[in-house]
Image 1: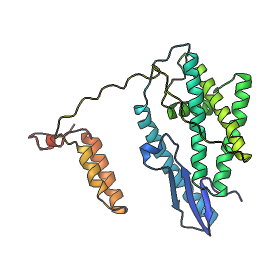
Image 2: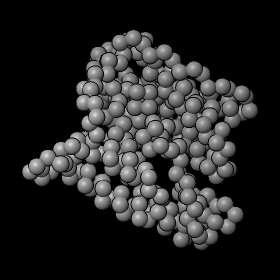
Image 3: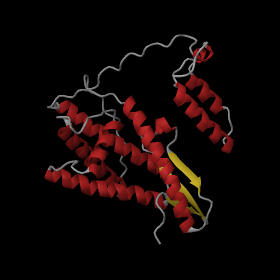
Image 4: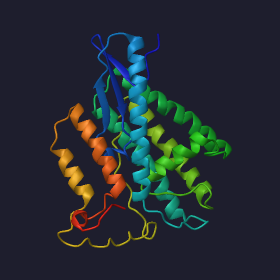
Length: 268
């Protein structure tokens, strides 16, 4: 019987394990979700893992939205310069090699490593075919893969942009080059991850200057976060967290706490 997705059997207990995409790890504060499903029954594990998977998927989507707000978006000209194209291809190659190296350093179980290498195998086949035919990132899955990898190297290019086709081709090229290097690793050849390429001058715009917050101005969101950090991890904290999150959404997390004491204040 096929094992449930994102699970592994440790002894006689099923565990849920799912890696966090590299670009989302700083936002979520972890590299992996791992917890016991508290059962030795594969069908019970399948159900519990499905619920956990849905919960994690929602967290991934929220983190992706935050990532979109953080990514610097540049107006790339219709004809990407050769320098920019080389950067995109090499940055994607190094990123994939870094992820592959992180998986192996993490000493994954045989099952987890098989899943990882199965994904890479699919990518290898897809990227080779797309580069041969020129039909790059035409499917929804292909476009998402290109967008995710562009985000991972700090770029965001809309599929409707004139630069999209060229950027997508170079991303796919980077994928294919990385997978040839990983093939060497699988053959027992030591292949270290290269140093990330230097960002070409002018590819990224300067980040907008942040408006300084008045000294001593504490926001409602900061108070909520500080309070939650001091609570132990239990069911009570989850209930309090949800209530405080709703409170913050209603009044606005950026609201200065001093405003709460203002006479006549009724919330925004």
